[in-house]
Every structure is written in structure tokens, then in C-alpha cells.
Length: 533
Ligand code: ADP
Image (tube, rainbow, N blue to C red; front, side, top):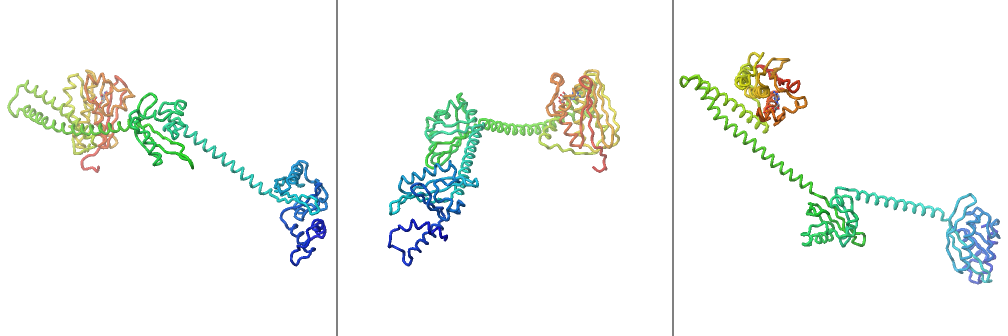
């Protein structure tokens, strides 16, 4: 230990009260022990006399402040402590002396290197037996501790700020939800908050319901039965309940709602309930529509079944009529007068037309049921077209419409003859129907690039360009005034399209516009018997 230190202490220790010397340690050793104790203390300690002069500093002081004791001893206000820092220190010294017992302070000083240090400063006044008063001080450097504390405080504040922001954002989000009414009621059932959805669904503004009982949203019968109260009690018991039931809007209208009611607590108290309400009116309407659609679908099925049954039932007697009329016409049952032949011709014509429509119905019901399957067989296409033309000739003759054909297909080809009769029949039927008196209907059939092309052209009313894509749809009739006079079902072209496509072909129509006639044209893969499909 430095010699001057022991010297310094002499003043203080000399006056210590006498004989109680530690065992084996004489007075000098005791001084050394005390000096070593002070110098090794982690606190910077110093003593001031009553005049405020520093009369002792320990070794820790010298290192901490990087000042040799001789520069400090005897001074009142060490030169390196700024005026601003000195004021509080002097005041604290005064307080401790006045108190007469130890006091703790937090002091700060700007060090000669510019760094600010914070000290925990323990000041304790004492007296020597001679009566002189001194003020002892021990300071600990708590700068790092204070910095950590400040950083912690700052990060806590930041956390709190973020939490507040999150809470606010969440509130804004809930506030703006429009599809759900989300609101809080207090334990007594008074509305405490109200969102956009609540206003949209009930019609009440926030100002109209805040602080009012939630009972107003329930229908009177439920209120009379105590239902809302029961829901609240269940939510309290079970935490939350869900319920579907009638609610009432501001305008008195009732609506079907799904409600979730949740009891809200903080650590100690029951704060109230959150209600989330969804208006199920639209959902219920949709469900009703779905039910109706399902019923309609069933009806549609029944209609198809009915059509297929009835049309088969119609075909049998028709075959009788046509068969026996032909036998009579052939005079197999005896000679006929020309008038009888004429009448039989009309019977046969009527029966053919009826069969044509019945066949359309049969095809339609098969189409709806997805059962349209073609059965190709070797068929003379020219003969098939000639037969169709014969069927429609009386109709054309009535309107003095010329029916012409140009068929350049020789031999038999593989097609479903009955179905193609139906296609060409529908096209010729339309051509004659939609062509005014004295017009012309022409059928052409010819091979082109390995396909069989069939065209049915007329000089009739034509089709507007916008209507062209529509004509092949089911139940489409373009100009109701015309079709009413000429009749029809709007099914013919849809059937044609399905049959042609089932053969692997395609159909389209060309018209230069209203009044300029139409040409329907379909193409089929040209397969002759014996050829690979
Ligand atoms: P419809 O039984 O009414 O003839 P279609 O499906 O055969 O039913 O035809 C649908 C509609 O297409 C017709 O109502 C008519 O408006 C139009 N259409 C069909 N063929 C012709 C044609 N050759 N000329 C003008 N319009 C036609």
C-alpha cells in the first residue's frame, strides 16, 4: 500500500477508541488493514470535513476518476466537475449532513473525456470522538445499468405503442366489416360498440343503439318467452353459444340470422358479451331457389320420360295408319276411284307429317337424356333425299315453291338413315316454312375433301347476322310473328346439330341477311361400306 495512504488515515484512526484491538493485530497492523480494506472497496470513497473540503480519497477513487489524490485533497469543488453537475452534488451533501443519517442519491457528472456518468451515491455523516463532523461518501458507477434500464424502458414503450396500434387496427378492421354485425353488450345487455355490418344488417346507426338494450333486435315472441335472457345465461355458463333464429330490423322487417354469443372476461371481471350476427336471408333464398331448381330438374326428367313413352305409343298406331293406307293405295284390297286415291294421299301425307314431328319428339327426349346414339348402316343417300323431298312436296306445292335437288353421291354410305332423314326433313321443313310463295328450295349433296357435304338453300326470309349463332339452340325461334304464323317448336335445328355431331360432322348456316334467303350446310365424314371407320 502506498505510504501516504497510511499517513492520511492516521488522523482518523488515531482517535479511535482504545483497547479493543483485534487479536494478534497491533495498532499499526490495524491501520494497514483498514487502509487496505478501503483501497480495495469497489466503491470510490471520500471524506469531506464540515467546510466541505475533501480530506480523504481511497485508491478506487483515484483510479475511477483518473486523478491522483494530491490534486483533489483540500479542494471543495474539484475543477473537472462542471457548474451544472456541482449544484445537485452540493445540495445532496447538505441534505445528508442535515439528516444526520445515511442517504442515497443518484448523481451524474460529465467526465473530462466528455462522457456522462451516473453514480449511485451513498452519503453518511459521522463524528469523531473529538466532536468534529465529517461527511463520508461512497459512489458506485451505475452508468451501464442506467443505460440498460433506459433501453428497456424504451423497448417497453415501443412494445406498448405497437400493442396500441394493433388494438387500434383490429378495432378499425372490426369496425369496417360489412357482412357481419359485430358488437359488444355489457353484462346488463346494453350495447357498447357497433360496427358497419351491424348498421347494414339492422338499419340502426351507432348513435341510435349505444347504451340501449339488445332486446330490440329480438322478435317480441322470443322476448316474451325469455329466450334472449336464456342465451345470455348459457353463454355465461358455457363460454359461448350459437343460435339460428328470427331477428328484427329497425324498419320492423324480420330476418333469419345466425348468432354467436361469447362471454368476455378480463383476469378478474366479466366485461360483457361479443355478438357476431350473420344475416341468413340471402342464404335461405338461395337454398329455396336450389330446392326449386332440384324440383324443376325432377320435373324435366319426368317430362323427358313422359315424352319418350308417349312418342313411342304414338308411333305404333301411326305405323298402322300408314301401313294400311299404303296397302289400300296400292289397290291390294281392291280397285279405287281417283278421288279415293287423292284422299288416301292426303291421309298418308298427314300421317307422314305426324310421324316426322313424333320423331322429333323422340329425338329430343333422347337428346335430353343423353341417349342419342347413332346406328350407321349402308344407305343410298340419293334415295333418302328423294324420299324426304317427296314427303314435303305437297307442302311446297301449296306455296308454289320449287323443290330441286342435285345429288352427286353414288352408292351406299354408312349413316344412320332414319336420323339423317330427320335432319334433312327439318332443314327442308324450315326452308319451305320460311320461304314465301313462288320461292325455291334446293338440296345439294356432293363429296368434298373426303367429306360429304349437304346444303339446303332457300330464297326465303333469311337470318340477320346477329341471330345466326342462336338458331341451333333449343327452343329458339327468331321472329315470333313469323314463327307464330308458320308454326314450329324451336327444336328442329337443335336436333339437327346433335345428330350431325353424333356422326362426327358439323353444321352451320349462311345468310346474306333478312330477305336474302338462307343456306344450311352440314358436312359428314364420308364412309362407304367396307371402309375403315
Ligand atoms: P322451328 O320449329 O321454329 O322451325 P328450328 O329449331 O327448326 O325451330 O328453327 C329455329 C328458328 O330458326 C326458327 O324459328 C326460325 O326463326 C329460324 N330459321 C330456321 N330455318 C330458317 C330458314 N330456312 N330461314 C329463316 N329462318 C330460319
